[in-house]
Length: 439
Image 1 (cartoon, rainbow, N blue to C red):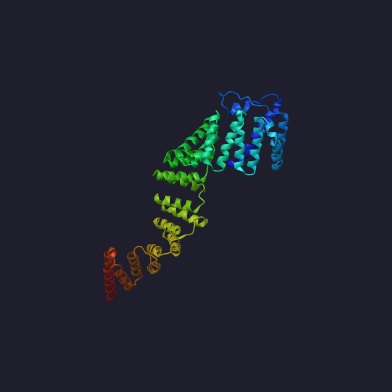
Image 2 (cartoon, helix red, strand yellow):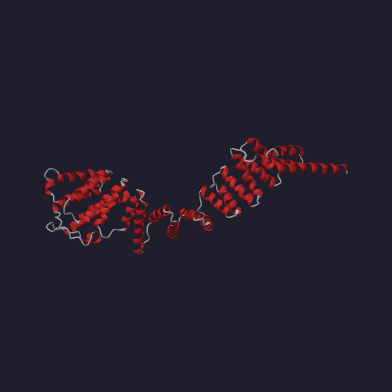
């Protein structure tokens, strides 16, 4: 973007200067750039007496400029070379020579010879008694060229020289300076300058550009000033509505530990259909879970899978399964947990799936999942998985395997008491059944 603006700036500078001279049309008069000077120059500086641009020189410059506009850069260069070959350079006054170097600079820039362009623009500035407006414009272009080449400090220095000459700097210049300081990680100066630019536009009743607000938002966030950053985001949401600003506002409210507004920001984006990435929807589900709304979390995940937005990996299916289980929607939790377990690298999710099956009174499936978990390994609490397996066996009427499994679970002190209670219960149940049979 800066490169495009610079191209326009370089050529428009040449066109403006030549047009003003052509309008005056009198080679005996000294050129005075009053209109431009009133707009950009310091009013308290004396008017510079500039040598005249003679008709013969103007005509050659105009011819070279026409060739440049037609993109005949070689032809334009030949015309300029002829003007300063041998004794020609000595025949030109400082203002005429400045215009020649100005066009040379544009030709160099057109070939992306930025160093060459800088060299020629410095020659423009070096000429004595050039119009103040010409120097001001050229210094600004020099600053832009440094920024294009990511020469941040040189660009800042050149821009500060430009600020020293003009009494009416525009908001764009302050933003450019802010960007330079930002690149050098001088965030305090960067913030100060972009704040000036934003205020200038707001005071004039203009809407500052979106990227200006974004630069300020980042800098406020870096300083830990979340309130100011949120103020900027609120403005962006009004004038530049975009999904990312709802998501960023939600994140900032999270940083402020304001979970209610954090959820509200994200939910607003979700209701508008703006969340179109897997991570966005998973975050939305987590926020619902944190707000103790597991049913809403389950719906977000389920719809995300149906719309083929949420990435189909084990962790995401696990989130969906846990949400539905917390919402007591066991029938909807089971298929999610089944996929999660199949995609997992270890047996932990099969152990959890066994619990879900047990809750749904699917005892054979519970036993099968528990056995797969133990066989696959990587289970956090094998003793608890054995308790689930034992309960599944018991409910299937397989007391022999149930007793065996509970004994294995009892080897772990963390489950010993509970396993022994089940062993006693199995014994009492077997006795009850024996008495019923005898009776």
